[in-house]
Image (tube, rainbow, N blue to C red):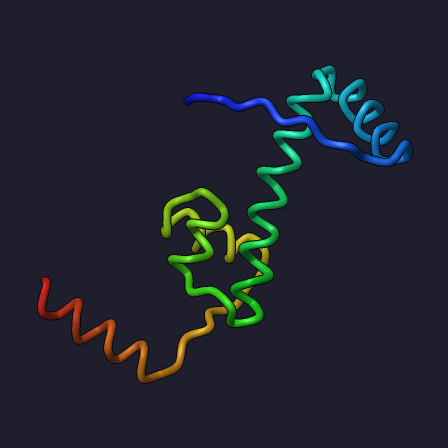
Length: 99
């Protein structure tokens, strides 16, 4: 994976928090920020899905995971499916054609 460098400005409290967290985790600040960004992507995807602003597929793309992994994440966070009965029937019909 190719990585890019990014320079950002943050307030002193956030910097102290990141430094402290990195120290507790015995990691450098860059790795800590990357982990928080990854977690933030997942949480952002969950919120978009809960607000019906994203499908499961779009939420998975936002989070950077597969659809099946996104469904596991939803289960872990107690997120209920935003699916109408008609959508379920349409999916079932499509599945029957493929299977």
